[in-house]
Image (cartoon, rainbow over all chains, first blue to last red):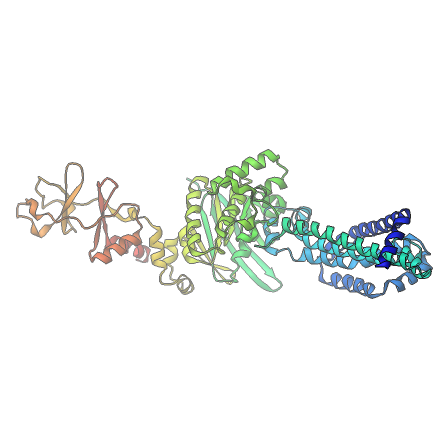
Length: 216
Length: 367
């Protein structure tokens, strides 16, 4: 109990810092997720067309995904130095797997009869993609984006290791200075914001599933 | 009168590698008819259909739609100009019924107002309430979805409709209802319809002409009546024994109705020398309202041709002229007689159907 009160007091006294780190964190994650979507969704749709390319792309992204993020940072520092750029790159690469995979799966699971009906009515390739395939794949694509976003939000705590700031700063400083109140304040902040984010995006997801759900 | 031809296939083939799925198929579809393609699965009927709107490009031969070779047309434009109906899963599940019906109009960038009006008009044409327009396909039953599919195919007002087993996914009762609706609708819209099915009863019911495919080859082509009279062993086994009755079910009894029937007024004598009597065993007695009072067997008449009222035998249960030949034959067999009187709704005597004429209908060309 005392620990919690200490953490609370620390939080109150350092409100300005808290807002700064939260902003850094959110900024990093939002940009990373945006880039992930911009790269991952078109790539996923593209590789849905051919089995061979799909295997190669999904295979290599899965390999990247298995590397621990600290090792990844270590790998990026000699190339990009420190700061938010390498952090952004690392997060984008981690977010890619679920987004690419879900976009690809979403497109391939559109029923061939539906596509044929649309083509039979005279859709050209672009109309088929934008008016039929993407809308029908959207719930699955969104689920991939959701996974990437939530995962990136918690992974971004590590960004402090290459000087990209974020909420990890509070935790790191708390560990270094044996300041338990600070450590706990940082941890609670990460946990609470992550859970909040998950709840919000979960709500959006439910709405989307309801709107687009194809279940009978 | 020259008949207008809407779709023509000239020696059309489709090869997948070395596999000849469709083998030099030729036929013409006249404007306003329902042309049915039928055959066992894998016979190439669906492939043939899809080559007409170029969902599947053909390997060789010519396909003419309204006189123009499809090879010279843009495939997308071609498909927009031809209605296409497949099993109900072909509705786009993420769009409302209105958006589904107006889909082609949206593709061709028609105004929102026009899309809405057309959807409202068409949903009524296919017999669904307009408040269904805001629903999604999954909220409709199979039969209702199929009706929407037909409405959607009509949206761009095409002359030609392609229907690929459109009623394959609904229960038999609904299917029959949809077939009847299609026939009724066809009376007003008069589209040229190419219809693929594997159900021979459906083919006989909706088809004005039927083409039977076997391993990519068109083995038989003709009206339902011509089809049942074919001597080809494959065709015979494919359509089955019951087919005869199915065809008779599609023919109205008025086609075999004898109107030249020996009649006599109730107060007259029968002229025994009249030509009309030859071949008849009975004369039919009518009153001044042309109602039939009954009949008298010729051999019970007095020598001078007169008769008394007591000699008149009342008619067996009669039928109206819109019953099918099948129904008439069944009725005759059931009652154990070789003729059936036909009257109109007001009991006016129309004539007699003879069992012999029904049999002749089938024997017809066999010689």
